[in-house]
Length: 308
Image 1 (cartoon, rainbow, N blue to C red):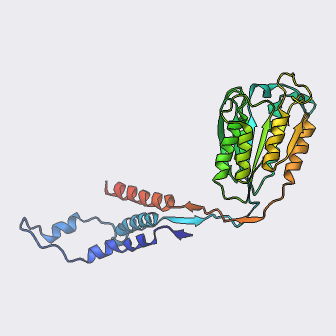
Image 2 (image 1 turned 90 degrees about the vertical axis):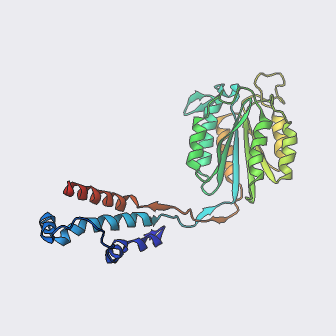
Image 3 (image 1 turned 180 degrees about the vertical axis):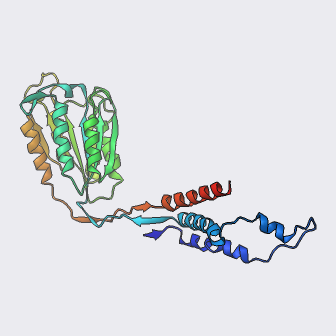
């Protein structure tokens, strides 16, 4: 245990020093005989009468000094990677053409399950989450707290960012955050099942900008249909653009038609070479001032009760 403000302990002898000061000069007034004072004085012992005030003062001074306990963690492993997941929340993500545990589920549900498992295994990475539809939002900033990212993924719903597919906006927002990072490895994992329909900047331009900043984009093309094999298919994914995004930035492309493909994609991403490093310990002090503070207040209450 340590004290946040140890100099506050210098206040402890203050009441004693005040008692040692010479009395103030006598003022003119009515003189009261000493025996009257003796009759009015409390009958309790002198020591007993001073115990509670001394306890109250000592406890309050200790609370002011700020006792605290160091709860810091040790050096924790870190990979040196910053990873931002950019997940498509357009309306087509509600299509139920995936299977989980033998039951049909939507593309979004399958992505949630796989992405949450992927994130949970990323101890040592800083993970962030971008969601995009008509617009792009940061649902979770870069953090070592992978559990909070997994919760944010689970809470994502189609419609909260519009129902279009602004891929380039999602990429731009993820790159803006990663460009300010000094991590040696910076990665965007882009998951989409459609065509860039509402972005203000072309996705290809965003990929070239990512390459200049040393940011790799791994693209995940979701859904059974794509514009290469079925050009006229409704809700088909633009695999060509997603592949170009990955190639331009030095990343990889994953074609995901079934739940098994999602698991294979997550396993492949797990094989990204880490850059071992050590994260400084997280400094956390647990404050204990409330305990002596409560004791001091209790002593003051007892003093008031005895005098009342």
